[in-house]
Image 1 (tube, rainbow, N blue to C red):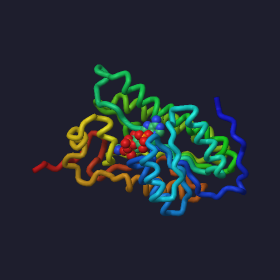
Image 2: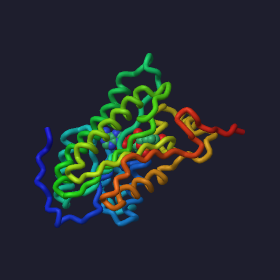
Image 3: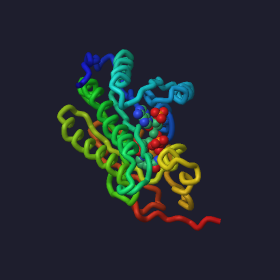
Length: 262
Ligand SMILES: NC(=O)c1ccc[n+]([C@@H]2O[C@H](COP(=O)([O-])OP(=O)(O)OC[C@H]3O[C@@H](n4cnc5c(N)ncnc54)[C@H](OP(=O)(O)O)[C@@H]3O)[C@@H](O)[C@H]2O)c1
């Protein structure tokens, strides 16, 4: 059920205030840094408190420890943000991949994790904050999906299912919220070298390194954060509906140029 939120007074809130999920590492942490540098007030959300505390000390962001799939945590996050004056921008970055098995060998727990975090978690956070964004009169929701939500690949079925699902939800949300002057942006990155993504997916350091082996300059978390900051800072009538971003060396999901290793 949708949590009941007292509508914040738009006049009492500063514009350019965001919740960023997935803030403890990678693209989320880089996005908090970039928005803070540009003068945004940011609530940085993830499950690992120590990492959020360190990021808060560095950037001035407000750390909020929360699991986006947990109803009580989402309600507590909403209460914290409401008490602090509200937001006009929600940046959903929390998500990820587990495993690279073919469907014939699919691990049910991995699939459930991916669908729960990428799809259900994004839904729960967004559902909770929509009344606040509507009340503000001009809100932004940015969902970080993936090129895995555009084209399937062998060994990707679980992650493909999750990111196609998150993308479908994002497209429906854009249609549903336009009347409320809420713009919905989707950012779809290809290969981004981050600290934990491939490691969490594949489970060991060597396999994680192999994902990027020989690839000339995969995207960095900072590259994607720059785009996110641009999209949410653009004049409100400008909706960058879908931003697909890949390294030059990745011309398509099936074409990654790798230099021979020494
Ligand atoms: N790296 C890539 O190549 C790539 C490409 C395209 C799209 N993406 C997408 O980009 C997003 C970020 O990926 P990344 O590469 O920066 O690194 P990542 O290691 O996948 O980061 C995932 C982030 O989500 C948070 N998170 C996971 N489950 C959560 C939960 N239940 N509640 C709250 N937070 C949760 C994690 O923090 P805690 O563990 O502290 O909770 C972490 O901050 C993901 O959605 C991923 O699918 C990544």
